[in-house]
Length: 151
Picture 1 (cartoon, one colour):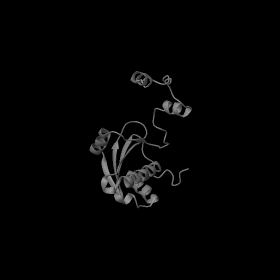
Picture 2: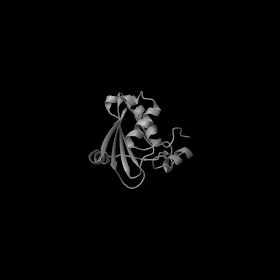
Picture 3: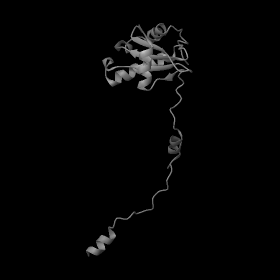
């Protein structure tokens, strides 16, 4: 009796393994995309801590309103912008909101190529009018605004 039960409950695959590869067209398209999506921003993002450190050491600081901007010479090419929002600004939700506001404001400013900008947020970034935020960044960078209304 036990021999019959153990033979029927033997651990063997019930079906053949599926062939390797994407199981749907949506999965296939996700596999092809290997780089970051095109954001349409007129600047390159500052990512590594070494780049931030270099900008802090070689750059000059200017404070305008709720934003402090560090301006340093950078690599050839489009402007490079980094964003710093510390825990003093608030919770993670508030810090992310401040970063989104700074990214959009920086996109509306005319930034010099071959320059590194580090935008450091204050808590007032969250409540400042957006037009005021754009003008504060323009004052700090010494540049004119590209456009107030972006399509």
